[in-house]
Length: 273
Image 1 (cartoon, one colour):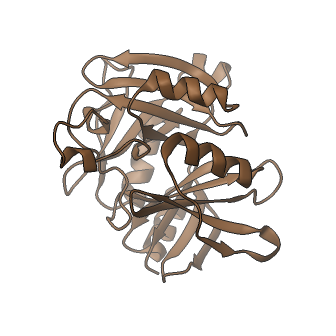
Image 2 (image 1 turned 120 degrees about the vertical axis):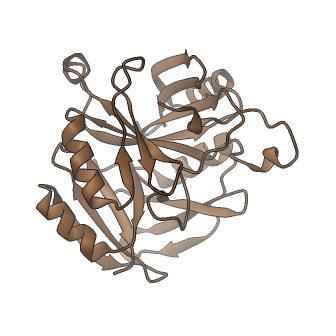
Image 3 (image 1 turned 180 degrees about the horizontal axis):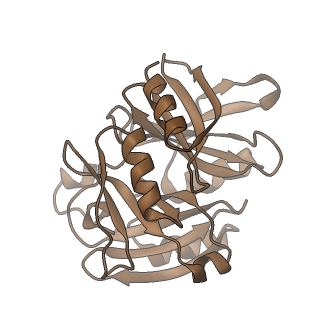
């Protein structure tokens, strides 16, 4: 883990505009094979460099960028975690002003706590929670002033879209809007699949919410921006992964794919054809 995820109390008016409450500030891959995941994602996402495991933080690895900064982290799944039901997955962190207060509100609104809040010295306080439909994510309050740019709508190597597929989009909109100040007024009709509602936060579009694409398919999905989808498809296949959807074009001219990495975690990519 790294302090770049920080969501601290701002010291100035300028700081108050950085990573405000409700911002996505970090992304984490949980995987049983860190070395295998490192080799795969470094080949698929140009500019990614997965660092060495931290003995202090149970082998946690940072995903560094050639251009500077960080894209997220990689958490090794050990036998005990797997026996407890943990599976390979990408998870997102939402920055909050106060973890305890946010967790209490999550529970009051029908969510649940799966990992009670705890402190990581010098980094921050985190908790793993689920929304009322059982979809997991983290909330975090960082320990330092440094803002995070793990989410960027346009920068290559960063997550640039956060997509929530849920069994109850109406309830999900109310839950996330109330907790994090997101708006979801704008939408795109999807025919028999209902509406694709766009999440707005502090003037930026950060993602969207829609119904399940298939029964029991509720999840957060995070799209990582790459310079070339066709090159990424070749790298996924040669690296032992699978492309399960796409490539296909989305509004705005980008193309996307959804895949499964060699360790079993779903991932998504967006970029030019």
